[in-house]
Length: 95
Image (tube, rainbow, N blue to C red; front, side, top):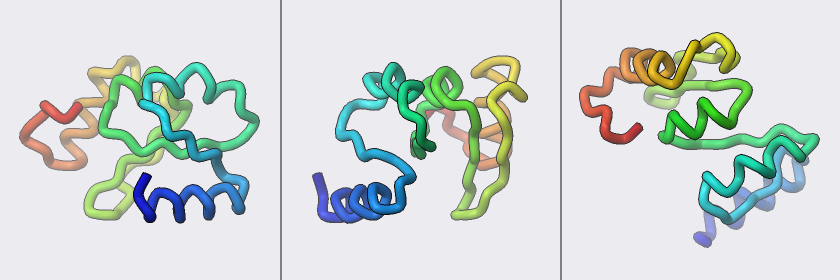
């Protein structure tokens, strides 16, 4: 764990926003729903985000370009299309 990760986890714990978990993202999905707290997930894995999160916020150059409930998207493919349009990415291999 890097120093930045340790400092971030301490700040988030003190604020009560999330519990820092040093596990691969796929292992988190089963435990997230059991927590009675907001958990912030930063990921480019849109399939994981679609299957796990209730809400999605998309950033482009540190600016929020979308803030919607996941139920606003019919499937992960729709989420991916919106993501690539809003972030102007040509290469879809990241997601």
